[in-house]
Length: 195
Image 1 (cartoon, rainbow, N blue to C red):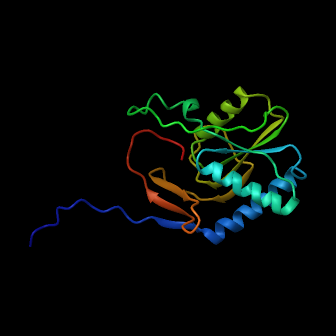
Image 2: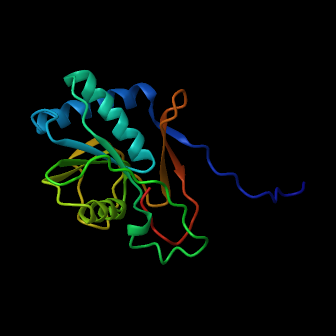
Image 3: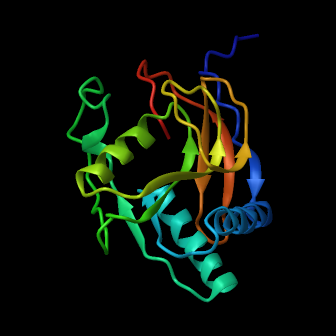
């Protein structure tokens, strides 16, 4: 018998959250956000591109359905604000269009991201926002908190705490029809990163 010399196949992704659970989580989060802020007044949702941007728009739609008021929604690309960019090597990073439709000064900013991991993406997003003005407050909402923080950052609103190993990766797909949160094994890269 000839031994099998083919490389081992990676285990298939495991679904952690399906579309109905994501919908229920976002509804609960929207209610918590409104309760903690005593309504939508001065609330400004800012999503971290790309997953956070989609979540911010979903939360905005829920707030509109609950309150009849549409808070402004922006999006930020924090690539050039990351402190680990120089250590990544490789090609020049792809930059996406940030968009802040109104000034951040005096606003209660709700920073939205899909996965909270090391905290470095959130720190970069706060640096970005402060370069553009002085919000009255910055809060953080995440769909998934997977632990392994490297910076003292904590989310104000968490959809689901999902303990993970460092070599695992949490992937969020918000495409209608295939919406889910998956757990996979990450490829070894040597450079820790937020997702």
